[in-house]
Amino acid sequence: MNDIKRAINHRKILKQKLNLIQNELSFSKTHKMDVPKGLYEKCPNCEKTINKKLNIQNDYICTDCGHHFRMRAVDRIHYIVDRNTFIERGIGYITLNPLFQHDYEDKIAKYKKSTQLDEAYIYGHAKIHGRSCVVGVMDSYFLMGSMGSVVGEKVTKTFEYAIYKRLPVIIFTASGGARMQEGIFSLMQMAKTSAAVAKHSRMGLLYISVLTHPTTGGVNASFASLGDIILAEPDALIGFAGPRVIEQTIKQKLPEGFQRSEFLLEKGFIDQVVDRKDLKSTLAKLLTFHQRTNS
Amino acid sequence: MNILEKENKLKTLEKQIEALGEEKAIEKIKEEIKNYKKNEMTKLTAWDKVLLARHQQRPKACEFIEYLSPDFMELHGDRQFRDDPSIIGGIGTISGTPFTIIAQQKGATTEENIQRNFAMPHPEGYRKALRLMQQAEKFNRPILTLIDTPGAYPGIGAEERGQGQAIANNLMAMSQFTVPVITVVIGEGGSGGALAIGVANKIMMLENAIFSILSPEGYASILWKDASKAPLAAEEMKITAKDLKDFQIIDGIIPEPPGGAHFNKEAVFKETKTSIINAYNKLKDLTGPELYYQRNYKIRQFGFLQRFNYDNLGGNDSDIYKNIRNR
Ligand SMILES: [Zn+2]
Image (cartoon, rainbow over all chains, first blue to last red; front, side):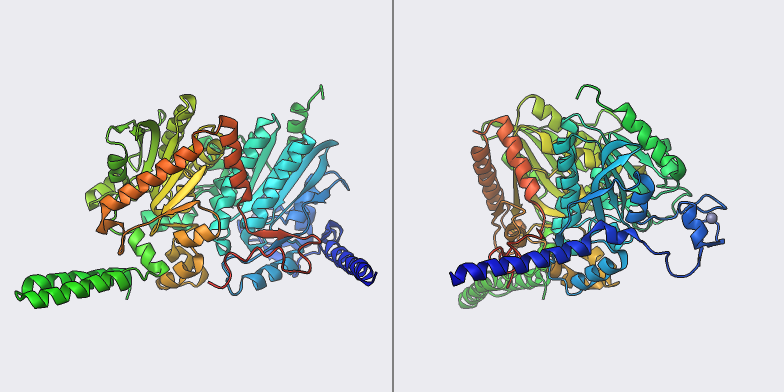
């Protein structure tokens, strides 16, 4: 009798803990993203100081030169999906430290706090102009949006959830590549995510990948390049090897605009470069084109 | 003392035999050499293995192919841009069964290395590999890939022609094949450039081969801003065959003679051949969908993470560190 009581008690405690963690990770908390510290910031393109609040109102686009600032994952979701339709999935993954790197856990904890995310990627069910889809967003503020085991797993889950629900997938990529702190496991995520895309594709479902600044390395060489339709934001850095690595290898300076969206559009690796202002309507249009009538 | 210095010491010992005429002294030094080989040359650190994997005399892919399949016929070109010499592709029989063989080829000499681009493929190399593998799929032929590359080439031309896209396409297509795919890492397996021909039903590694996300030098210079700490990085990154076996990333290790594969190439080739045939015998009775499922199941398991649930809150029952802790 005592054992049963203890077990029930134990269960209760566990449940409380779960609630605590879920509350901590729930999307509503990240909802109220603050205005970043400091009221002014410098545009990296035209070097003009601009008011941050104005910048945010202008969707993180420089009012002067049209430079697209990097966007946090949460802001991106609020910007792209219909109001109050985003339901986050895949909560509760825990990043581990397979190589026993001595400061990796601290680093993760630090980024968790500063970005209010549990990893560099979030996904969920959402609606864009009333059309259901699965939206995934990478956050380049979380350790350069690098892909470790958890990010790879969540990307894979994105596609598996979409297969289950027969929905199109839209992923916004922003990543410096694979996460080297997790060693070989990060590398293998490339195979895992690519296989997931293939499975989704075999079901005849649509996958749109939107490349934002920066998309390089392992992410570029896996799911980011496998979209049925690949869009990109203007002037985003997109490539497999980083520009610094290339410069070191060939020992000469790279030409202006190399590895930028417009360059890749010219070389034929991107369907369209879309301004942020038109992004939502473009996505909605594409979703309409691919809507299934007899399902 | 790293492995290259040890090797030099061994050579000086061997030279001493010639210098001495007396039988007794010869016997003594021979004994010393034997002991040295047995005791010192087998004690390898991770950095030693990196050096061995990059060793100039290490057997190259084409030597493996020559031994495995004497009737190998090379097929060139990606049908779009050009033939990439850093990837060899073709058809050959291995103990009676025709295989499509794809391999990354380092050069034995400096000139050959320059011609082969130090086994760093361009996108057209990956597209050639993909073309040949799709051909294998069409004719229901098993695929063998041999990995030996520092990584995909980072250059202007490679980027212009879509390095990332070429690798991604390979990864996606290889996961879908319904023929047996066997991969052997024979030397260096560097990042996505290696994985792009390595999505397989069975992945094996030579004992002193490495498979890593980036070079130890790169790791050290990014993390500690000091490329000379590469030996430390090699230790920390867990890139040797044994580590990866513990991580359950690879399925088998092919033993090498003490001191590395170049001390007894013949033996290594023989071991490799047996391992490949064993792996193939296990796979050949599976049907196409079973092979597809087996490979995808294996890929799906990759990763080191936990998800919050009731089971992993309290106890140590689901201890996923158990394979790799305390080593
Ligand atoms: Zn500006």
